[in-house]
Length: 198
Image (cartoon, helix red, strand yellow):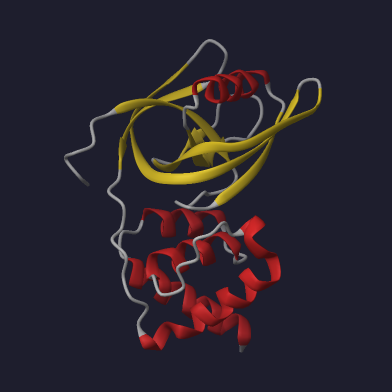
């Protein structure tokens, strides 16, 4: 945790998914509280926070989010029909929720502190399998799903991208998001890949 980051307030969007820094997540917004949040984010070019749900559901009563989430920015939006917004978001840095309150609209607003970015790290030779598999996935799905720059020599980037695309449980993805050891994250993912292959 870095002392450079002061707490700030951030609207929160609890989802049954985890966003990693640098990752892309398209969303379909239709609930009033989130339509308002997104409209304000677009108008102010402001971020909001995406957190995985610990208890509850995506719609209705505000869900209880996990304590670590990712700040995202809207990179593109469209309103194909009245009352429904399609947005593209890009993950920025992770944050820890220090406090949380619910607005009258049902929107959760957190007092959050940013988590220091992980420093780039080389991919150890014994984990090259992870890089090979990610290269195949990126070649197949292209830049739309994996915005450039591609950093196949960086264990942080490789680990984040694999954590997004592999068929992992939500709780596993959350644990991988909360880790600050990029090589350990990649080791866990490589073990998972080996089990899938065997």
